[in-house]
Length: 90
Image 1 (cartoon, rainbow, N blue to C red):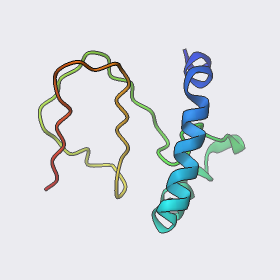
Image 2 (cartoon, rainbow, N blue to C red; image 1 turned 90 degrees about the vertical axis):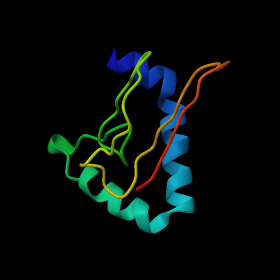
Image 3 (cartoon, helix red, strand yellow; image 1 turned 90 degrees about the horizontal axis):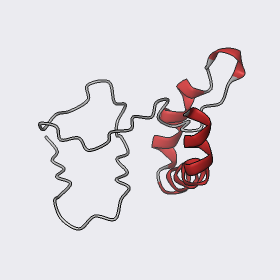
């Protein structure tokens, strides 16, 4: 599964990393620091975020992920025809 995700979305992860580094350099430096400390010198393909969550056909109540550092990236992927992605900030 991991290799399939990298094959399908690897270029997207690289592009996202480059855009955040260019557009939000201070935030990038803060986010990338813990990723540099991964054991064994491993490099995460989603470096800035250290984790990747894939939700399929999910609906959640409004919430704030308490362990997010400064911000998170939500990337909906589909050919959407109806419904909505609702975001709110406190």
